[in-house]
Amino acid sequence: MNASHAAIRTNLGRALRRMRHRGHLSLDEIEHCTRLEGVPISRSHLSRVETGQADIALSRFLSLMVVIGCPVAHASEELLPLVSGAEESQPRAIRSFSQLRRMNPGVAASQLRKTAFSGVKMHPSLLAIWGLTESALGRWKVAGRALTRCLPLTPSARSSACLAVACLGQNLGGLSRLLVTAIERERLELGTLLRGACLLSGGGNPELAARALSGLGLSRMLTGDGRGLALGLAAEAYRRSRQVKAAVSTAENAVAEVEARIVKADLLRIHARCLGTLRRPAAGLRLLDRARALAKGPKQPDLLASIHLEKEKLWILAGDRGAARSARRAAAALLRRSGADRNAPRALPLHGLLEAVAPPIIQ
Image (cartoon, rainbow, N blue to C red; front, side, top):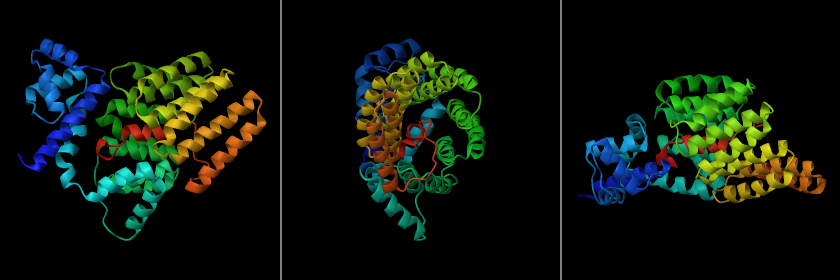
């Protein structure tokens, strides 16, 4: 076996492990459930597949997807880029910028802008990385331009979803709704999630949004981070419809569902806001401290600014005007340094949404 085939096998094995973890299934549970499906996969064989030491037959792969609860069409969207883009065949710049955007988004965005404006034809994955990097800095307009350039080159539900979130960051709800309509034809659960975000962004009926999103969050249509985001948006909808206790409990469930640091930080912010509405600022501030620690790791200045602005409101509610001013100054400094767009919406977990819908190959 050559190095390229070995890399593809390793990448596919890691992707299958991520899908199994998202379904919260152990190797023993997979073995038991696939035996009931009639096409058993032994614990040891699946372990070797996930570590890139063995191949998996098509019949066993289909059985595995049924047990995990992942439709084959969705699995193909996640796995095919790994087959066509093993690490050895990817441009070196994609790997470098994918790492750099996590460590220093400001530098990554600056270098990618220079490349874009130099007239060089950029790889679609680089355009997507550029869009995600600009959004981390709160520059939603630039992010929207980058993702608009990326969409015709890699037309898919995930690429459209990234652009839809960027449009929400620019308060372009109408354009976002058009994109969501197209997404729903291909990925109903993803479209429903973004439809709820559009409804809340446009000031729609929060009770209607809460019912739809809580139903989506409790269904098996989404897993892991997607389910948590649906519940987080439902919590915000409950809060707006003045069902505060339902908002707090739903937000708590949302945080428990997710694993990704950025998604969890954004949902902790929603949970803290719900606690503030319930007049529990101290509990909300503790959650925001956790959110701040999570967001600092992957360098998300715009999300950090949103967390500080949420802190300002809770400190005011707690009666500490000095701490509120400090939080406000910290947020202003972050926004000034990153060059974030003015008046960008901060009510919804847009950073968490973007992280969850981004194509796996650039995450």
